[in-house]
Image 1: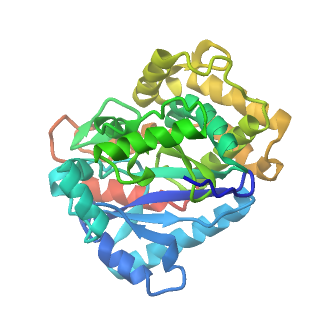
Image 2 (image 1 turned 90 degrees about the vertical axis):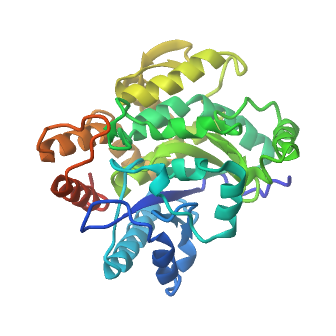
Image 3 (image 1 turned 120 degrees about the vertical axis):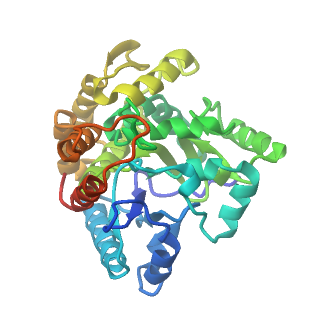
Length: 384
């Protein structure tokens, strides 16, 4: 695979949004019709279909600064909301829907969706969840490998910072983020193996392709992966945040972390150790969010996710690998001490539900679900 070098530390993101019915608060299998309508305008290229039809994906342009990324994503979401509104639909964030069941999902009428259906059966419908992918530009293949290894070591922290999937299949999962557990079902999903060099990366991808389980790198669902055709490293483990502003702040923070790694200011002292600690940390981040005690492989110690994030924010401020993002990085630091998305979602539901909670297996109350969904739709561009 040829690595198409890009300008170092450029920035982009992909954002998967829930397509819902305002009348019921339920997911709506209307993504294809919404996508077709969006294709009629000049911004159509920024929207894509996913495997199932309760999703619309937004793809931002390449940016130099978080400020311009924020402006574009706000504009694209506003456009998608307007077109959705014309079709009697609404859009919202969050990593899972409170009332989603895999067997109710409808596949998109795309060739890729049909391939996934044949290859994986019910799994693409089960994986009808909502995440954010962040791309950071890299100057060459070896830099991409080195930075990808560092970012993979920090994926428990990315999960904790973005945790927004506490509900699944009419139940409270007990986790801050149950969505990142879904890729672990796939033989080619979950943590990226430690990469020795670009040749090692190519050989790992080829091994999966040789089994027939994957046709290309696009079919390998690692938490982090080099993206050679874009010249980037892609971080794929985030839940979709409740708000556009948090999504952009997280993207800027990820880019700054990649900048520290690229500049040699964040180095793994034992790059092939701490595999068990990394797996446990990933689990704990899913369960406990920013309250989790995670293993920092750079310092070689267990710390709370919140303290780890704040310490890295201080390092970003001191070294300033992306000085143009100062405001976004400061905003993300404030978010570290504020209310987490998964807690906001639980509090909102408990305030609306007649029973004050969601017993496992119970169907959400209709009026409560409508109000809950409307509140989350309002937060998408409301600065939560």
